[in-house]
Length: 329
Image 1 (cartoon, rainbow, N blue to C red):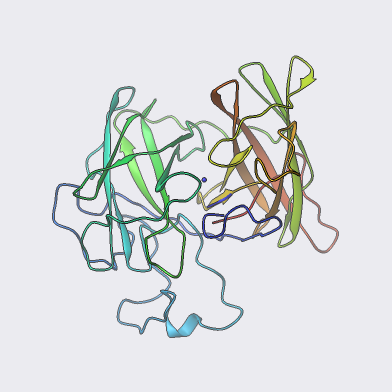
Image 2: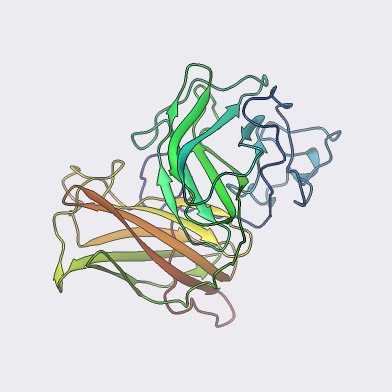
């Protein structure tokens, strides 16, 4: 998936920044319960939304106090409810280490389950699941039931707090793509893992992925991820979700979500099928990020993971070793 954009398919060089917040997603009623109001807010210990509920709303879901040209865009994935749409995850903890049917709903502006979506990158909805220590990443595609309930067989490998991101485009919504996020608990003792050190090389299933380019906060950056196997470049990557690579980026600390896609697309006559996949990126702030590159080869999708560090674009700052990121939806 956003990131990597849903609102506009794979346009080269389009960079969208995302910002900071922290949301707890399981304060909404469970899937089986009556729908909450369409304009819900984060529950639990999450900070309040940027506006009071009795403040007048503008057409983009903000208040009259943030309509200035310099107002930052709402960051993707940090809110459980945005633009009148609400993500409703299970309220009860999910089992750890067991494959089970994961069910959730998206409520529309009328408070009823949303049942009409526009396809983006070959799917009506992309579900990203990751533990809050940025490990255990999964990207899956649920099935929509007639009653508006999404379901997918899913394993939460270990106990802990997980973040789930629903990445979709409501049918007929002129504002386009949207990413909502919620927290889900997997029962059991949680031992968070430290964030891996930044590195320009990642290995997965015998493949080596290398990262070229640096990420600078507040500036557009070009990043190329190159795939090789046994020391030889892979030049026959297969399309996955309409591209040769699919990149998700999450900021360490608040898990702000950025869904990225590469330049070009398969079959356009100018985009090679590897080894390099090029993205343009803009990070909103300096700091650590985690990148997840999905690529398909010989019929199987694999994920290469990187920790990257964005440096300051001005004042002599420079993107840290292993920096990288991509475009938002």
